[in-house]
Length: 490
Ligand SMILES: *Cc1c(COP(=O)(O)O)cnc(C)c1O
Image (cartoon, rainbow, N blue to C red; front, side, top):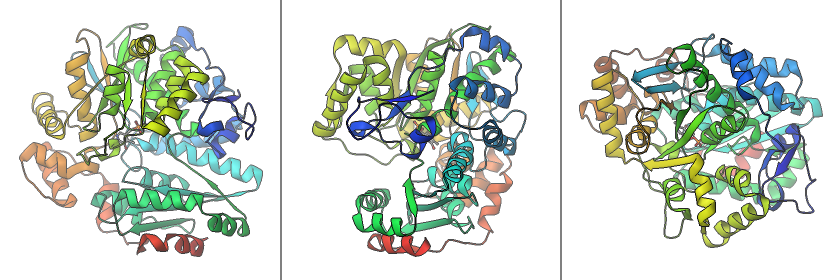
């Protein structure tokens, strides 16, 4: 399988690239992204064949259909990381909340958020490519909370890869910060910045553009790569769980094979939703994909009105911070699939130049055949957390809770919905404790204990341990000092 480019081809890139090439340098011509030349058509046969397969059997066969340039034993090793999830036999449990409403829990991995679903196997794949090429890579990451821990966890002690991870000191939850600063491995460097997430991210962008930094890396024979969610090496692992969740519903006799379902996805950078869209195009019976957002509701407006409008628009901080995103990168891949490269380039160039684009009526109709959307405020989200817990004894995190709003407002109740749960309650405990009991300004440790009592849930060992583990990463610096600090680490 070869990969092509969403904005057409300029003179700087070959017309097609392999999977490995798309992973190592994920940005294509004109700043576009790589997409599969042709998605495999799995059809109902594939679903029948895997009706009773394990997650890994299904994953292996789906990845085979993509015919990527990665050896079978590397794929096996990558998929074996799902064995470390809570239940090796079923890394993604699908749980019934009520009639026609199910939650697919994507957070049972080591860092308790759905980033593990893709980043765990991705770490093995990237490191194996680096070893095959005999090259060393530095992964730079700026995180507001979930990506950082998942990236550190997956690359820890992996050959030919180093990670430098920037986070805003004081800008993440205690659990998220502890997950990073207790990571102890020679190839990992965690750097706290005095500032907010935007400071960390713009520092990273400056670094990526710095000639001085590039030369210094060359001297150390190190290349730069990225593990962000536009990387197709992450997307490919996010198709699998949509198919798995559907088959789980068949196994639970919640639906019959072939019956259409809603996929309801709490969305930020649109990687999760894109995985569902690709699964659908490959043959999964889907009624529609519902995109759920928080107050940063640019995706809701796009899907309803056809306008991607960032004029006079600023990111606001919400109770679901992993979705506090305005430029949702993976939307571009859907535009490409629906409208082709010429139009996608035009729209994306408009967005860059004018902070705005508008779809034509026929284009919006195409988009709306596949997607619908709604957004949920923080207060509404807390109401849904409390209600869903009290009525159905099901506890959800603030990201997942945004789906309850769109479930009620846009989906037909007679069609079964799968809501994707992207984080465990332990990762956003102060908001959840506030929703359940009204307590305010709690520290994570107190909120965890409060929820644990109220909801009668055990705090998982890997979260409990964080509070007594030794702090291995103590660097907290001004943003001007980042470059020197990273070079010292290399
Ligand atoms: C990253 C993340 C999201 C958003 O997922 P996208 O694939 O970027 O749309 C939602 N919830 C949580 C908890 C996350 O960590």
